[in-house]
Image 1 (cartoon, rainbow, N blue to C red):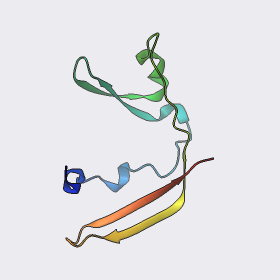
Image 2: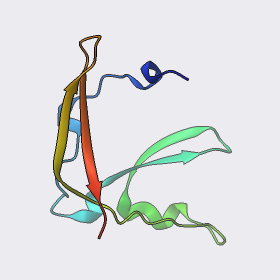
Image 3: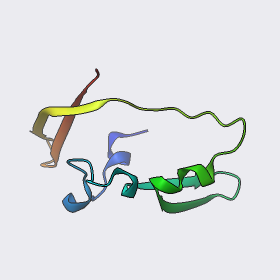
Image 4: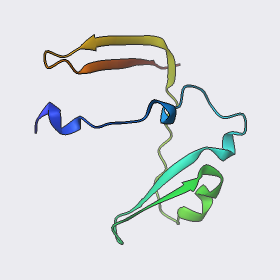
Length: 86
C-alpha cells in the first residue's frame, strides 16, 4: 500500500466544519456488504437499518481548533486536523 493510494480530490464545501442546527438532518452513508451496495440517507433513518444483534459503536470524539498545514515534496498540500477526547 502506498500513501498515494489515499490521494483524491474532495470539494472544500463538503467538509463539515460545524454540526447542523437540526442534528437529525445529518447525512450518513449506508454500506450493505451482502448486496455490495452503498446508499446515502439521513441519520433520522438510522433505526431502519439496524437489526436485533447488531453492534452499534458510538464515536464521541470532538474536533478542537488545531489544524496543521504542510506541503509534500511533490508540491501537494497536506492538512491534518487534530482530534481530542473528553
